[in-house]
Image 1 (cartoon, helix red, strand yellow):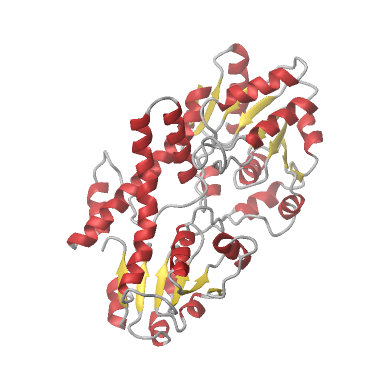
Image 2 (cartoon, helix red, strand yellow):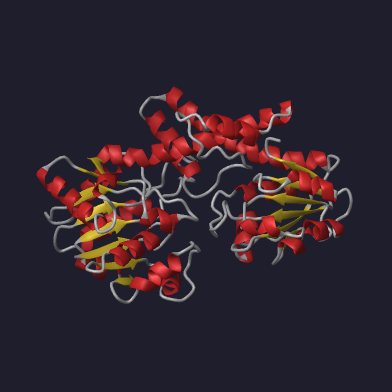
Length: 452
């Protein structure tokens, strides 16, 4: 069997590497038009950072895992084609700011129809709106000279930072297909691939539309829990309650559970906000404005939490940070990844730069040019944005430290030495509730955290 995956990003690369690693009898090729990205996948420095990914890629690369720019050739040779291209939020036209931009999905469907000489199984791996399979089917039917294709939905449920663990031991693998004999056969083909290492009871099969919708709903529910506890964090600050203690208390209720109840400066990443906004747009499109408003509030609370954190810094520093040095510890949207998409740090740094602060950023995995692009765009410059190579360098002469990403290394820093090198009073704002506030206050910091 031959598999081709179109798209060598955060989803396609790790997922295909794991399939190749666990199923050495299957030839897996990841294709992308971006030559530099393919070169990186074929090098010792992979284009994404994910714990454990290097070992998985090296175990299979050159044996049954390949990375190539020969898109048409590999599509034609494959039995199964995974589609893992980007589906960003539209920035133009109808649905701008909410609807998914499906132009890359459509382009892939047209390419498959153009180059395929026999029927294929097409697997949606990208996060897409419900009913996207119909679009793919219509394009294939209209352009493929009578060939028969089966379109399956197989959404990813990976968490960046633990993606390899999630792929090795998934909570579930979800596969949706048409409820026809040909559809059932295609579903079983994909089930058999995952069954190389995933217990059969964890492989769930549904119709196409349930599978497509489940991805959006899963992310919406997870983000909802984060926004819920973050809304309570503001109430805790106003009432001297401790949000961690509240979260622990309610998390012991078996009906609620403890996961995703960690208050923070706000969620980020490529999926949560994008998928909720997509869900909002779908609800509006199907005439469900009350449902749309409910899910929109999850994003609104998240935006407010980021703004509230930046405002707290300004107010604490005597209502002005103009000309003051603010150290930002962490820029990735979470630890153990170099992904900055929708990172809370972007909004916080921009707010502080607008307030005329000198913003000094340190992140152990995010390159400096990525930080500059995220904050300033491709061409802009701002002398008040400084990027350094250590947390201690960022904190030197800083009026305040803001912990924005929960990197483990921040827990091992010599805060006594850091304190000595800061103007007094020295402020520390823990946006991840990562540090021991009492110990910091004993040293001399004016320290605060989310929901405390």
